[in-house]
Each structure stands twice: as C-alpha cells, then as structure tokens.
Amino acid sequence: MDESKTLHVVLFPWLAFGHLIPFFELAKQIARKGHKVSYISTSKNIDRLPKLSQKLNYSIDFVNLSLPLTSGLPKRAEATTDVPLDKVQYLKKAFDGLELELTQFLENSVPDWIIYDFTPYWLPPIAARLGISRAFFNTFNAWSSVFFGPVVDKSDSTNIRRIEPEDFTFPPKWIPFPSNIAYRLYEINRFFGHLEKNASGVSDWDRFATSLSGCDAFLIRSCNDLEREWLDLLPAIHQKPIVSVGLLPPSVQDTEGGKDDAWGFINNWLAMQREKSVVYVALGTEATPSQNELAELAHGLELSGLPFFWALRINQHDLEPLKLPEGFEERTKNQGIVWTSWAPQLRILKHDSVGVFLTHCGWGSIIEGLQFGKPLVMLPFLGDQALNARGLEEKKLGLEIPRNENDGTLTQNSVAESLKLMMNDEKGKIYWEKANEMRKIFGNRDLSEKYIDDFIDYLHKKRK
Figure: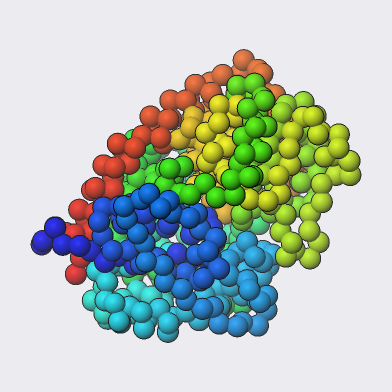
C-alpha cells in the first residue's frame, strides 16, 4: 500500500458541541499531515466552530448539509445547545433526514475513509456499498467505554446484560480489577431514557450498537499513558480493532483569537488576581442544571469567599430560562465575574491566576483543564460525566462535590466546602500534585504527535 498517497478522509459528527469539537480537533490533525479532509455538518454549526488561524499551512473542506424541517424541532435549531433536553429527540429525527444528501456527497467524492459518530446507524451499509473504509469515533474515554460494555445482539433477547437501573450502580463483571466506576442511582435514572425509543424511532443505545457494529475500526480519544488497563479490555469487548488517536489537546495557537475585546477584559481581570487563586467555573454546552442546582452553586461560590470566573450558559430556548439568585451579582461584584457570552476557555485555563477548574466533567473539558495542570472540582450532570468523575477521583485528579445519594440534591455548603478544601486545605494538595503531573500526558505535544502518526499509518494500511 502506497503510504505516500494523499488520503481523503470525511468526518461526520453528531450535532452536539461535545462531539463537533473533538471531531474538529481530529480533522485538524489529519489535515496538518497533508491529507484532504471533509468535515460535514450544518452551516450554523460550522460557523460556530473555532476559526482556524490564517497562519496555518493546511485547510479543511467544510461541507454544509441542510437539516430538513422536522415537526417538534424549533426552526434554526441545528445543535443540542439550541434546544431543551426534551427536544433533542427531534434533532435526531432531523439528523436522520441527512441520509440522502450525505449519500450523494459520498457517491460523488468516494473518500478513502469516513469517520462517524454514534448517531448515523444507517451510514455503515452505505459506505460499505461504496467501498469506503469506516471508522467509529468514540468521544468517551476508555473507562467509560468499558463500563458500557459489549454491544448487545438485538436478535438474541437472552443476551441482555443489564435491564434495570440498579444494574448500572456497580462495576460490571467484565472489569477484572477493583474499581469504583459506576453510576449512582439518581444518575442512571436520569440517563436510562436513552435506552428507550424516542421520536426518531430509534433509541440512542440502538444507534450506538448498530453504528459500532458496522465499523472497520473503533477510534478512541485516549492514550496508554493514561488508561492502558482500560484500553486493553476494549478489543475483547467490542471485537473490533481499537485505535487510540491520543488525547487531541486543543492548541490556543491553532485558532484565531476572535472577540478580542472580550479576551482583553477577561485577561485584565485575571491579571489583577493572585496566582492560582481563581476558581474557573464552566459547565459546558450540554449540561443544564436545574434552577435549584444553579442557585445552590451560586450561593456556594459566594459562601466560599474565593475569587471566581463563571462562564455561565443560559439556554434561552428553555421554557423557563435559569436565573441567578436575586442580588447575587451585586453581592459578589468584588469577588467574581459571571460571564454569559462567549468565553475563550483555553486562554482562561492557561492563565496563571486560575487555580481550580469547576467542571461538569465532559471529557473534552477535562482534557483542556489537565493539559494546563488544573485540579478539578467536579459536578457531573448527565451521560458519561459521572463515570468520568469516578475515574478521576480514583486517580486523585479531581474532587467531586457531594450530592444527596438518594436524589442528587446539591447544597451550597457542599459546593463551598469542596472549593475551600481544594484551595486552602492540606487535603487538597494531593490533587494539585497529581494534576500537575498530568501535564506530562495531557499537555505533551510530542506524545500527541506520535499517536496521530500511528493513526495516519493505520489509515493508510487498512483502507479498502
């Protein structure tokens, strides 16, 4: 096989920024190696991706597809961040309406590989018919992927492993070593609906299972240096070649500064704070706290007395948009900032004044924080976030804010005490030390380069 040949690789992520961004990071790395990359999404989502720096010596071909009008889906909604959680099922239905347009693109371009997400369960047979190699890109880490376990053969009802929520509250039998990776009951009760059919006619689990079954390779955003023992379990679980693409730590230099006025203000405020004194709070684009959780988090920040920068996303598409406690911003104006517009997260995390990252535990945010050695205070909400938090606690990289074990209730005291323990208590030192050690893995560009080189080599050798 001619490994000097320029490959054409198509990437097709799900319409959520927790997926769009890692696919974009992978696209950049493939393009940087001199290969043709087509990144497929909707025009609105492509416009919201970080803008590539004009100084870079590579480019990405962005391909715009048009979501069909779908009953139940608000107009101009093109990502999960545009809709309340109960409307995401209609976004999946609209996503399935991209099948014909995507097929036409593939027929006309015939790429070497298509890298896709869990949602397009209909894609593998189309790509196979066209002779296109297929890679399933799993944006979870390995310990979460192992926890979810093997894909169930839907034709064999006796093969169902876990059917009750309680079955997910302890590590499964295929984890052969001690671990606390599991859900709490209130967490899995929130998550369990993903196993049922929704308005799209297909459950998330069936999408995942069918998409994975039809791939030639299982890609994962991880590395042996972080979780070798978990990665070693995946080949037997999925019966697929497992290819680590590395952690794909994003680079500040790869994207345009954008909104420089915003960064100028933020940078000036951070520069006035003591080194490692600021709590940076960001809960991502998917996690939406309840009104009570938002209030308790706000009161907890205030009660801690610590300086904070809170990148707060208020989803205006919710029937009742969240509101901060009355008078909170006025009372804390000399303590912290609540920032409700776009915030340059990488630049903020890189700043010397930021000490701790209070995060929802999305895998992408974890990578961004740990590449700069920031210890994590963890407040998971949905999906794999709780499993991420358990794994990070095992490694002493993060401290989870305690919740009520029965219903997940959050209190301001638990928020404040967790922050003060991390910032001021002797018990918090271990997290700082471990997070700083992780810079050698999460922030290691040479290590990332090796994984990308090996990945590109795999694409050359295994293409159809």
